Image (tube, rainbow, N blue to C red; front, side, top):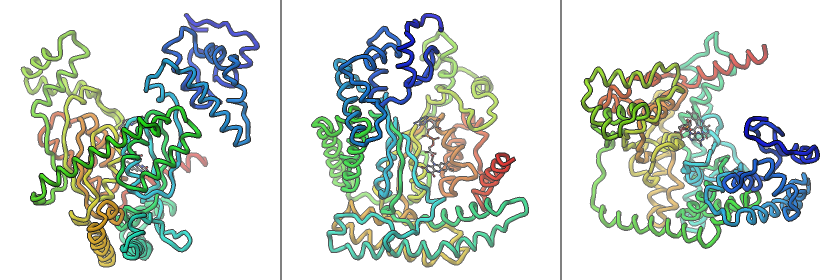
Length: 540
Ligand SMILES: Cc1cc2nc3c(=O)[nH]c(=O)nc-3n(C[C@H](O)[C@H](O)[C@H](O)COP(=O)(O)OP(=O)(O)OC[C@H]3O[C@@H](n4cnc5c(N)ncnc54)[C@H](O)[C@@H]3O)c2cc1C
């Protein structure tokens, strides 16, 4: 038993506790076999109790008659009883938490949720979450999107469009996109393989996977935003509650329905944590968000109606701090000094170039890999980028959370990008035709149903979005997203961001050693070869 900890457990109490804790006497232990709400309630008691957690579990849950603990964790295999048990836990949780109404308590329990057969519009709405939600989505690189179910391609048939006179045009256009994708997979794979023949050091498995990933990467531009996908989420209760409110505020009917289904599923797992999203308070919050968005949109359109589009620019560094170096240096010195930040800023501005470089280099040290990220002093300065790139690249980069990202609507207004490889393979014409037909349909439907028309927009069309990120996230983002195995379009964005920052702040990015500025014919090959090595080692 560690110093300062009591061990007053009887043998009988130890037997009662044993199934629910990973250790009966270590000060560091885990909770197991307990519903999320009970774990949350237990931890929430830390702030209002002098007892240790095992004692709270015993006194206030296991032995408290009103908790009916055996029903909560009775291990029943009957579905009905399980639900009753969760409800029981919820009621108990509510009693325990009377007077502890801190929102952060809802971060103490979480849930895994599968969202299947949702459109990319809905998937992006889910993945827009940052704090507290970890998503994973079916990949357009590893999974071909050409399978039909009951003779139909898998895309969302948007309710307002299907109820309108545009229904058959919508289906014909999206079928054509999927048909083109399906027809091009094999010839494109053959072309990729003919351009990059397998060498003796590469296994059939690695070669097939790398070439197929390349072909699917090249074709993903044909997939419309209506394409159905699967997203798995792990999140804490508080994050889910906020996400449900945001989904309720969405302008898309599909996203509303998704939010309602998620609420139903979460009500069966972590009901106490997500009940406010469906309460009057949650509904009022959703109305607040949607009303403000609609009014701001109206005002923007009124003010900017006559402004023309600027010439397209791929990646623009819109704003950076000319005093960034001094600020970062002051932040580097700060934890090692007793001076005020303001004094350190003055000191930093008076340093010579060589002195500044020495401090920055010492702080970053020898980075052996991209995982050796500089510390929080690099969060002292920010960069704002405006990016205009294909939706495929946006979908990938949107997944980063430690920054501010906001996009404009999905549109065909900024034109599309056709990968040069399709031209080289002589397969660009059907690709282009399908895209252009989709653009006409989008514009046509947009006249009546502007919000729903976004479902037609294929991933090859450009979207504009802004990213504001600090230097520390720049290191992570640029090094990860320029890595060889990445998709060429987002690699190009990461590489351009690096060039632009290097131009204005060379000293601050001098330690960014793991930016890959090369181009590759088969991005996935090296990663697949590494997998081969691991497989061999495992077999060995
Ligand atoms: C080659 C490649 C293939 C990919 N394939 C897929 C795919 O098939 N499907 C798919 O869904 N996604 C895929 N992704 C996206 C990937 O899963 C990440 O969501 C995305 O790259 C964001 O990365 P991040 O979490 O490292 O970065 P950021 O969100 O920018 O976060 C920066 C860092 O902060 C920390 N951090 C951020 N959030 C958390 C958190 N919640 N918990 C703990 N630490 C956190 C981590 O250290 C993280 O590296 C792929 C990414 C790459 C580069």
